[in-house]
Image (cartoon, rainbow, N blue to C red):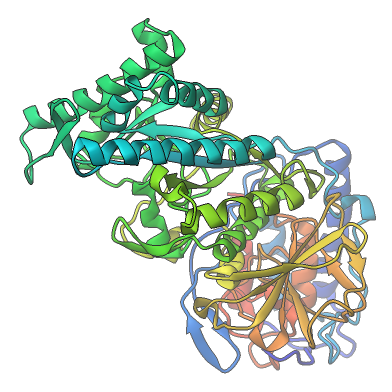
Length: 627
């Protein structure tokens, strides 16, 4: 969308006065002036920012053509302390109709307001100053032993190869302070019981790392010593029960042998995580997990979200049997979601998924932007998770996973683990058990709140639960490199994926202290011109590479001709709420239906993507104030 001069507009039926300083303009400016007082007084009183839900409604357009369908970022606001803004707005609207036009501040050819802000924020109110209850992103690693094949003579060699491979993985994670959450089939555990020298010490190391020894199974039952037979298609319930008992029993026996635990409740607290291909019905599987005393569903079924949005859910939830991605407040089982096998680019659970290192890094930066928004704006305190899985067989030297293992651990440790991003530690290595316990604590502190839910079985941007602008640009993005640090700013170069109209170069930037910064990136950026984009609202600003403003919630830098327009949110100052301060900006942008297209600074007021801020947007703006 080109930046163009914006002229003052009229509401239908209004007439302009000789200088525009009519009663309506005076009324609106009085409301705007009151916004400064109300806003600053509420902040001095310590009023919390209203929470913002980013989601729903509309389409996304690029100048000249429609590239994809995306929803708007709608602001839902709840703050009983606010005055009835709608009354003030409609009083001002009546004054407009009776007395004449609202004269807005124009935009120059560069798209910047030619009038000063009616209520400029002092630096301390620009973000990063309020303490958040949101903890660091929890980075999880799942390793599990799959079924074994061949004769017992073949299996024993496979077993020893896997022991060595998992032991190697533990060496690497221990060196980085990471944790492995381990699960196993009963078939592998049968060999462990016969190996007190190598097998039982490995289980002890795994338990010390992740605090769990869970059960994983596909479709085999035990019919003899080291003889495991596949179940028939659509097995009856008695064979499903035998299958579960065979695998769970073998894991429990190893827990007793390796850890000296015999009390059933203590064993259940260790064997807490269950992954099962049988039964295939989610409702029955979840119920069986609860009946057997499990608290966690191993990640896997939640990967369906990737089929819709090319990333994984970022928060734990309680799956519903009838619709796995829909949160069930009364559900007995928690799923802690993250990606499948690291290093691969293939199909898992029927879904093509890219877990190569640059793809994993790109998705992690997407999560960082969502996390920063939660830390500084939404302030839900939710538990944020990410990670990857590996089969024991994937850790053997020469495999894709083995080769990707240390590069990802090194990158995370260098840039994010216990590193300050947005004023607090960005990430920490954790176990599935840690994430479950953190989620329990969050549930207890936020009764009735939902951490994640997606109640659909197809791509539905109306229901997307994260920042739409961020994923619009970063869906399928490929990580390239970290740029040299510039003051408190950290930036990363990526290549946009095809879903975003790529390939083209873009950047993700944030500050380490959580305060906005203006920095010179001219020597680091590729040839421009460039625009900064808010990951929350999608609002762009054409920038001078020598003076790039990086926001508290992070910033995207994109080529100016790759800009995607999003329906307005009304949040002009991008602080996560829509208040009288934003109304003052809306009034300045009001242009009417016949005016030339608006500039970028007025995009938050263009709710219907008409490239104007008019009466239809006026009604929509009123609707995003307090319910």
